[in-house]
Length: 422
Image: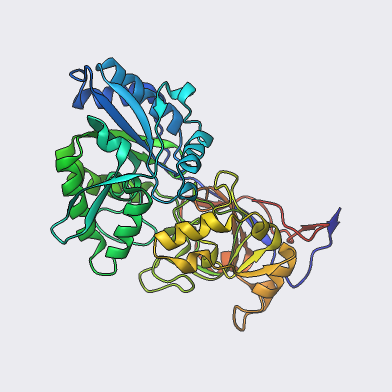
């Protein structure tokens, strides 16, 4: 049973975007051939820690298994280290459970998982910043740094999220993440990245990096092994490629963005601020943002985020069922560690979606609600299919890769007053 549509809401059209779609067909072969360029022997009797982070990287279990197999083939003894700062509730068991939820289990990848929040301070940077490093990784003979390269949600530079961030925040665990985010108040993100990376590369036995870049469909598009001495230069170029392949909203002036789900497996801030246009200010677009969303309504959390609702505070509206699923401790720890306490703040809460949308459309200015420029997306990783209101389509020219595939339809709510997902 559904509730009859309301004339107070705009009619919505389904829009489909077709992005470039490079895809790696044989994950194991690609990993093997890439790592083979860096090393294929010489690890007899040597232990190698392999980093696995908290992001929802496509094929991460298959990639990790292939890395383990290659290291064993080179004579080494690999093991897995969860590398994710304060995620997983900042506990060893929570971090282990998180990577296992991605399929990275000891049985599947063929290697032991050694999860700990304990770090060693290996040195200080020239700025006097202590460099924290996961104890298990420090005790290994070598470390293989594995991570996805993509734009950061809060910082801009030649390097944002990728191999360097894994060396800082991932392997720095909670203590390191807290230290570096505090240091950002005194030093630039770029300065911290380069200084900490110099120490890690010099003192922590980094064997190689394995950089992963995904396409706009959240699929593995590129895997590249990187020698330690090439980390910086290659990551600069890989970030440019990641940006080029990144999905985007097809319209840029939006009164209300409806997001079906947010989560740590989607973005470090739950929803990617590079997509929604709030990279520099939680609640308003700046001249540096591509997209201007006046209001954001979050409808749910992903299963894989395990209640971590980091980024919920970027939205102005949410519903009760989303709030009921929040793990307050995990969310608070994550946001405090990253010096982003507003990311954990709870927006206006409503019993159902209909009530939230009604109020949201009262706050967009002089525009009548049924003429509002509304966009509904599944999440900020999956933008191939989305819903866009008639007014937004009328006032924006769609890019060549986007097309309208359905006629306008009224927003339909179920008996509880909730929308269907995109």
